[in-house]
Image 1 (cartoon, rainbow, N blue to C red):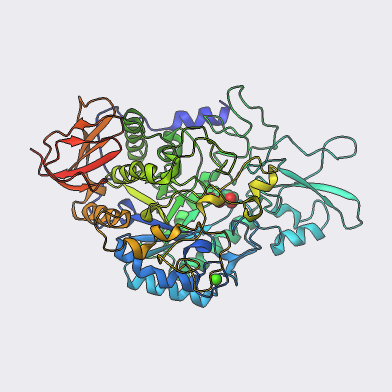
Image 2: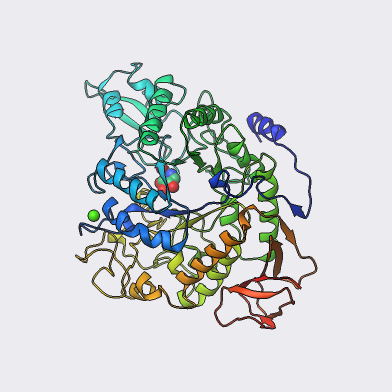
Length: 576
Ligand code: NOJ
Ligand code: CA
């Protein structure tokens, strides 16, 4: 642990260990984000109105009523700003405009208007750690001389070695390969290097430069002025780098990216918090409780909670939860740790199982082989479950998650029970991490395949033309929204039921109390008026008389059932 980490740990607020963990401390209706279910829209793959094979803002507008009907509170849109799309929009060339493949600013304004009319808030993905190399600032930096103000907006450094032909330090890119690229100076000679923690087309900003800070506060205002309800902040643990950019010396037990308790020098630096305090103040200038949600890959949870102290962000994605196996003891432990860690700083916990970077949880929770985050799945992978068999466990996991106090994030398509697409051919793949690792990592395309809306049609209602930026599986129609809407027992109707009951019973604001002495593999707790029982084991267990069954992840388990089969979660009310 470095000095910085020791300091962070010391500042953590200790929470008393207790089996009764407090829920978010406000009344329902206050601070909407404390209880919100936020639905992630991946614009490329949601719905394509103009038929070019890439989803767009008009397509999202068309799909919003279906999301309001589902019962979510807000949508978060992955990036749609101007971008050459080298990392699917997480490489922004103009932070104040919509990329033409997604539409126009007028489309965005209409989207906000329609969403608000439907009672949905709109959260925009902001990418402040790096821009695209096409951004005018980076182009100006390339054209300017070493030491110029243009270069000072990014992290340009001289190389090591007598000829400067070795990178300034040993940092590796999250997407594989080195984190530095050398440029040619104006006279054509090999020159300085610039830092890119991700792809070489994603140069990192220098956040010690006040010009960068002022620019982003202005960008926040640009979107807030348009009625945007908040921001999901990309790489919110990465904007400040350790002073002097020292080599990373991983503990022998850690990989080259850290990922355990040790951060590489480009992640988890204390300096990021001052940025969010300033952003918090910007958001406070606006009415309507605008929010910030951190994508901060730091651990343990008590450390992640530093991103959601009262004067910083409102939420942080609970990645330790999404990384937990379908195992009662492990789940209980991460739920307790989450409620305690976030509760200790007065923040709600969030819960998340899937997103555009993770193997979809239908597939992931039943994998029988290791699959490190970001590795993805493809033809060479082993241990991939058969989707129909894996779906039951995924539904049980979602039924558990949606009962937990705090906020929850859904990733588009999980309400349809979509599995990871594991047979994408190499020539269809788009994720830069596939290319930067020479195909060693399949990457994240398998969870990004466009959504099926209709059971038939060339692109299953994603559009009318049949074009699709990633190929859709031939049997995708059986997951289509139209095939599940109104069908009792479908995954879509299960999510709708759970979201309705969650709201009706105020579960997000209720206390969670564990039921002890369960059979091995069983998780049971009461939250508000609802008792939740989940069987993560491999044998049926007897279902104690906790009340009447109001929801079941498995339609064959109905009220009065005496046995709870494996991979099933039920909700009961009116506890005996
Ligand atoms: C995290 C985003 O979720 C991911 O999709 C992206 O590739 C990286 N940040 C870089 O922006
Ligand atoms: Ca389109």
